[in-house]
Image (cartoon, rainbow, N blue to C red; front, side, top):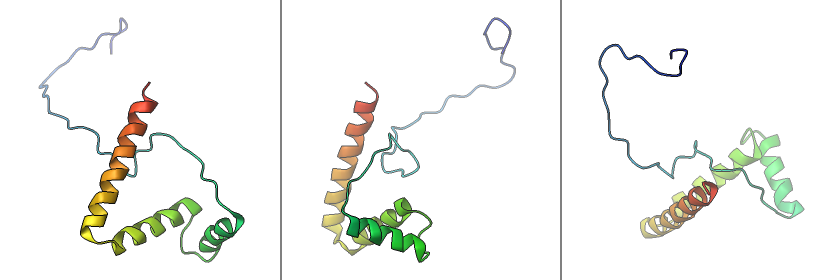
Length: 97
């Protein structure tokens, strides 16, 4: 970038089409939130971490989520994933306001 804020381009420039964001991507977090639970569930999550099943409570919950989804039938998985994607899109749209 030059001092006046412009760019000088030397060489080849190409444009590529970029698709919409993949809302299923767990690496993309729209915003952080909290989850209320009773002390029994909290202790369960802590125990999973203490026993080494997961490095954090959040990752333990993710493992539980994955396990739950795996035990569903194909139609149930599709329905659940569709609902999750709908909620994710809503979160993304609301966070951009």
